[in-house]
Length: 246
Image: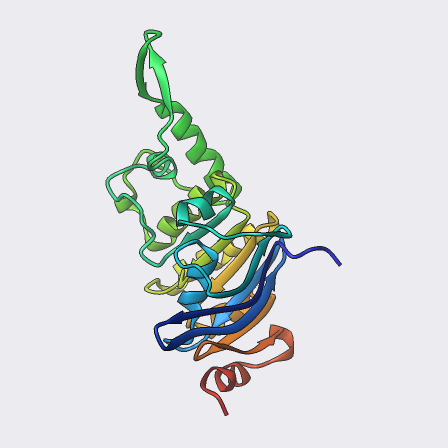
């Protein structure tokens, strides 16, 4: 059996006397979507923050490609290929797709042989190539992303992650606040990532979305792992029972 892309073993995290996570283990393979389900306060956010460099686990081990990892910051996690796409997307609304892909890492070229200027052509090419890889078609690559719909903005955030070679994408409530056609587009993007061999951790309150894209569902309840199921072998009712207990 191949080594998991991401392996979480016995991870615990405490805040004072509160056990936010207690002995949680899960694996994520390349080309797989694992959904994290659980009520508010179940520990989903704490777990992804432990993976993505926001928090340090108090106990347990996290491995990426078989190597133990411990990050000092989210930037270190990104440099190693773990990218988190939060609900608010962290896009600069007034900038184009290309400028958002390179936000904070802007490419420069030398004008007249010495003057450093933004390499807009490279940024535009990167935008076109990344959107093509996601099979996502936007007419106006130079338009500010504020002009785009919710689903298109998700595509830009995902495009930025894959341009920088993310191996693991953590998607936090990616379909929240979207209409049904836009939700379908985002789910199609998740399937495109899977086909490209990325590992996706998909967090959602929408069980319909979870059953549509997940290969496995990991259920958290009050900081513990309450169960793990394959969608074809379970029902929404069983997942809800695991989430609430009893």
